Image (tube, rainbow, N blue to C red):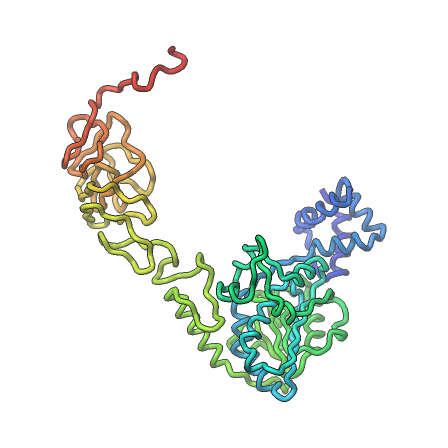
Amino acid sequence: MMKPEDFDFVSRLIKSKSGLVLSEDKTYLLESRLMPIARKRGLKDLGELISAMRGGDRQLVEDVVDAMTTNESFFFRDTKPFDQFRHVVLPHMIKARASKRHLRIWCAAASSGQEPYSLAMILDEFKSQLSGWRIEIIGTDISREILTKARAGLYSQFEVQRGLPINLLVKYFQKQEDQWQISADIRSKVQYKEFNLLDDFRPLGQFDIVYCRNVLIYFDQPTKSDVLSRISALMPDDGFLFLGGAETVLGISDKFKPLARQRGIYQLNRPGAPEVDLAALEKAQAGGTAAASSGAAAGGLTFQKPKHMQTGAGTTAGSAARPTTPGATTPGSTAARPFGTTGTSGTTGSTARPGVTPPRPGTTGTTGTTGTTGTGSSFSRPAGSTGTGSTTRPGTTGTGTTGTTGSTYRRPLGTGSTGTGSGGTTPTRPSTGTGNTSGTSGTTRPSSTFDRSRFGKPEDKK
C-alpha cells in the first residue's frame, strides 16, 4: 500500500512533467501502473521505486510518466470530427488556400497514430482536388514508446476493427502475419515527434487545423486555459480546433468559439473567423441518421456503426426479430424456427425464439386451455401450473401459447400433463393415467413404476 506522502510526491512529479492531475482516489491506478516498472527494475515494492525516483533517476521518472499517460485511440474515433473535417473544414481550406496550396495539421497527443492516419486516408480521397498541394500532418505525443508504434503503423485485428470501415482496411492495409500494416504511402503523409504539451509550442510552427482531442480532460483548469491560449497563437484567423466530446472551451478560454450547431469543433474568436457552409455536413449527418435508422450504410465517410450498435426497424441489426404470427418473419431478422406441420398461436402467444434448434419434423403444436407453460426457463413447471406468453414444452398446453417441440428437458417421471396439447411422434413421459396427451399416441411406461435395474445399484448398496 502506497503511503500518503509517497502518493503526494509522485502525483506532484507527474503533474509537473505532463500536466496530468491525479486525485487521491486514483491511488489504485498509480499502484497498478507502477508495479510493473518496479518488477522490471528488480525492485521489491513501490517504496524502493519511489526512493529511486526521489534520488533523481531521470530515466525512471520518464518511465513513470510514460506509464501514467493514457494511450487510448482508434480509427475515426467518434466519427463526427472526421465528417466535420471532410464536409466543412477541407472544402473551406481548398478554397481559402488555393493560392498557397499549403495545409498544416497538428494531432496533439496522437498516441498510436490512428487519428492522423484517419485524416491522411480522408485527404487521399481528395487527392485529385489537392494535386500539387503540400500537406503536412504532424503527430506528437509525450510517450516515446507509443510513437514508435505509430511510425510502424502496425495494428492488431482488434485495433483495425475499432472504427475502421472494411473498404478502407482493404484499400490501405496489408496483412503482416497476425497484424495489419497501413500502406507506406499513408505512413509517409504523417510525421511524428516527441512533444510535451507543457513545453513551448512556437518551435512547431503555424497550423491551420489542430486536433487536441481527449487531452484536456486530464488537466486542471489553469492548465487547460494555458494550453488553449498557446494553441490559438499558432493558428490563422480561419483556423479550426477539434476537441473531444467531453471537452469544451466554454468557461475556460475566450480564444475560441463553438461552430454553430456543431459540437466538438471550434473557430478562433477573432474578427477574421469566416462564415462556413454547413449545408453539406448537415445533409451528410441527416443521411447518416436515416441510414442508421434503416440499417443501411451512409454515404461518404459517414461510417456505419459497428454491427452490435446498428439498429433497423426497431430491432438490433443482425439479431432475430420474433415474428408476430406463425410463419411470418421481420425483414433483416434471421429465419424463425420452421413450424413443422402446424403451429397455431393463441391470444397472447409468443413465437419460437430465433437461433433455437428447429422442431423435429412431424410434430405439431396446438393451442389449449389449461396445462403447463414455460416462462423463458429451460425447465418445465410442475404439471397443472399455468402461464401466458411463453413457449410450451412438448405434450403440454397453455393459454395463448405456441406449441413447440424438441426441448432437452422433460417433465419428471410420474407426473402428467392435462388438456389437449401436442402429440405427434415424439415419445412422451409416463402419465398418471388421467391426463395424458391427445393426438397421435406415443410410447409410454407405467407412471407408478421406476425400473432401478436399468441404472444399477448405488455404490453404497452393492
